[in-house]
Structure formats: structure tokens, C-alpha cells
Image (tube, rainbow, N blue to C red; front, side, top):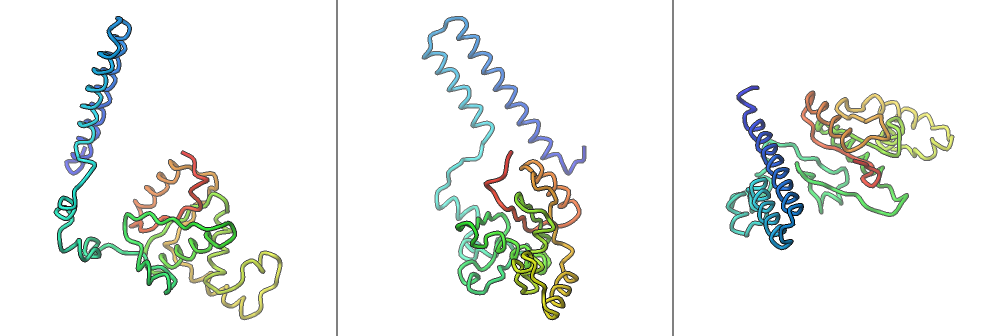
Length: 231
């Protein structure tokens, strides 16, 4: 073990200790039940013991007052939130009218795109991923309903401003459209990654992201879509 990881190892030891104490507490409660102890007494013991373990497992308070929040963040950062993320890349959205409402996607945010079927949620997510990567932010895309080649086809058509639905239906692109498609394909950013598994799970996504983060500073993850995810 490296000295730099002592905090992580200490946290692991702490979690394991809490689990062992929880097992012992449950065993003690079961023994009291088997011995015929009074039900209220057993429940009181179990509640008190498990509550104490819960407090040890999560020593930080779950709730904060306004004063505590401002003290933790700092008055200056509270009024100018962007300063909290100094030196960290934000993801700019590709549409000017949307940027008036959502200037950028900041680290740690969860953004959900919701609309009726067929409105263009996947296309919008693909455009965000493409623009993010073009801006230098390493981006990972996971799709549970399309193959990676299909997603890339959509992204290329969008970048080339060519109607992808017409191409999929068998329409032949014009010479100008073909030229734009070739330019868009050759100009695809190398820091845009697509997962090739359509049946991936939360665990699989986490593992893939760990491997990617080991090679590059990961900045954005796009998942299409959340309802299909399985643990």
C-alpha cells in the first residue's frame, strides 16, 4: 500500500468494521428472540444499536442550515458559483438559445433530457457529446438501444448537416452532401468514445469509465437511456 492511499484504506477498514458490528448486533437480537425476551425490549435494543452504527457509518450530518452551507462553500463562491470550478472544464451546449437558460454543464451535474418518443432526445444527446469532444472534453457515450455505428452515423450526419433519416431510407446524397459527410467523418474528435455493448449494466459502465479515466481526463458521460439500465 502506498502512503498516498492511506485515506482510502482507512475508509475500507472502517466500512468493514461497521459491517462486522452490524452482523454481531443482528446475531445478538436473534439470540434474544430465541431466548424468549420481551418483544419491546428486543426491538428497543436493535433500534438503539443499529442507530448508533448508522451514526458511525455516516458521521457527517445529512442536513445543513443556510449558514452551514455558506460557510462550507464560502461567501464569494456562493455569489459567483463559477469560481467553485476554477480550472475545471465545463461543457458548453451547442444551441445558443438554450445557453441563455443553461450556460454550461458543470462537473458533478446530472442532466436529464426528457420528451415524448420521436422528438429527438438521442439526437440532442449526440450533438452535446460531439460538441463537448470538439471543445477538448473527453466524452463517453453509452447507448442501450443502438449500436455504436448507428450513433456515430447520427453524429456525423448532424455535424455535416445532412438528413440522416433520408440516408437510412436509401436516398443517395448529393455531391455537396457527400463532401460534407466525408469532412465530418474525417474531423471526428479522437476523444469521443462510444461503447459497443448494447446490453451493458451500471457495473459495466462504471468499469468502462474507470478504464477510460485511467487514460484520459474524462469530462462528460452520455447514457441513452436511463430506463433501460439494469444493475
